[in-house]
Length: 273
Image (cartoon, rainbow, N blue to C red; front, side, top):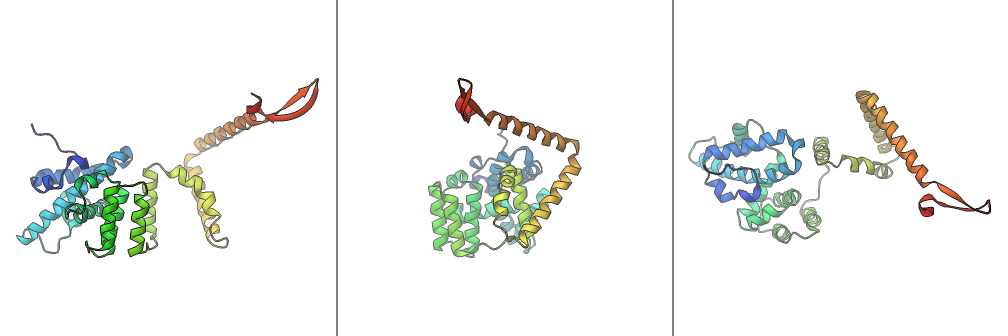
């Protein structure tokens, strides 16, 4: 019995996917759509699956273009529409962007497929956006420099790719829809606590007359909704937090050092121990 294919980028070569039978290729695309519905249950798995399905999408795009030439599909059929006809859902923007990275860098030979497999989703997306910024000119210096970064994968790769992207297309301000999508990604990746902890520092950089007021009111209203939805549970969390804070303060309180019954100074509890 042949081994069942799964969405692991390093196990799925683009050449193999292009030659795969239509039914198996379509099922891989549908599998990714199911994974997207369970994103919170397997974040790391979904990240690699996104890189893998990008290859699947690239193979589907090749099949679509061949079909158009044979009049099997309308000439104006987009890849997103074609994928939706297979999976029942529109493909995620992130996966489509990674598909562009496969086509621009792997299929053209600018990088090896193993370089693609070993790179982070973030770096691959930045590299794809660089190609888009130069309108698909693969000979552009920015694209060639991006390919070098994808090959070398140094510790500052993402920063370097972002600088290359900024050099050819300054980042526009994101709209509210994109901001919410990014926020949901932050939550899904488990970074919400870190973001909220950083909020007081960011708050101090805002305009005092407008931004500070709007952010304060929005945060206060959000907190009210959380309290209303969680009720007694929120009160319990607050009580536990106060108890822990009190215990920590008591543990760090200074103690008095005496000599012959007379106080001579204070030292922190930890130092005295």
